[in-house]
Amino acid sequence: MREIDVSEVTRAVKNLCIDANHELSGDMVNALKDAQSKEESPLGKQIFEQLSENLDIARNDRIPICQDTGMAVFFIKVGQDVHFVGGDLTGAINEGVRQGYTEGFLRKSVVSDPLIRENTKDNTPAVIHYDIVPGDKVQITCAPKGFGSENMSRVFMLKPADGEEGVKEAILQAVKDAGPNACPPMVVGVGIGGTFEKCAQMAKEALTRSTGISSPIPHIADMEKEVLEKINKLGIGPAGLGGRITALAVNINTYATHIAGLPVAINICCHVNRHASVTL
Image (cartoon, rainbow, N blue to C red; front, top):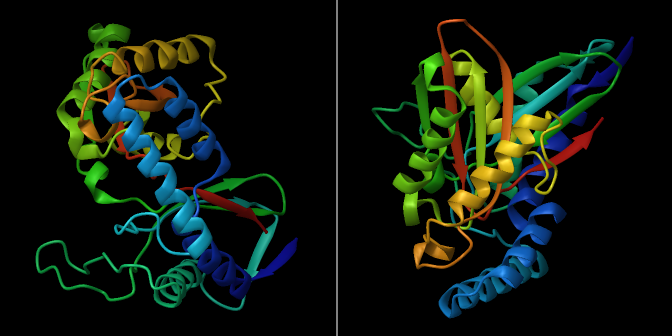
């Protein structure tokens, strides 16, 4: 059994919140550069140049890439041989968020009640997904999620008879409906299977997969490629102003499901697809 003091978790979370908002991961930077080289629209090329300049300024000046610094979402993989000491794990994560968003001068966007809507003033609480895994390490993935694109996400409770074509159509419909509101070029996370809530969680986690890495399941990898090509033929383009590149990647996660259902969730993220990880 390995002991980890929760103060280590707080420090890690604080740094992840700040770093993820100041600099995109390498996979996203490469995806944007590749997309820029493929864009043919003059206006689309200009948009990519502006996005690239914005990333450089954010990284060099240590300021947020986007004014919407997101609601903090975490995927925590906890080794079953780990014992946390010194306090409550969830409390430690939220303390890290509080410190990161306060000390990092990041916009506080969380309200304590969805109807009364009083700002918590420190961007807590975070949304935390725990997964118990073998081993004695803890992997923390931070994915601050802006709501311009979050609001464009969808869940479809398809019938099994809708099959693969129904899934593809659902993804395309979600992207069409999102249009310019999701700040394209976008990354499209998809969850297929499970239950109503499971497919949504899978779609969210799919956004943290490095762009350029396909699903390990051959027929799902083929679907990712096909749907990405179809999305990029829609003509929405960078910033929704027309062009060849509407999406940078389509990442699909799957899970077993009930014989009577085919749940599909589409979680769209703008070009500021922030995710950063650390292992303790």
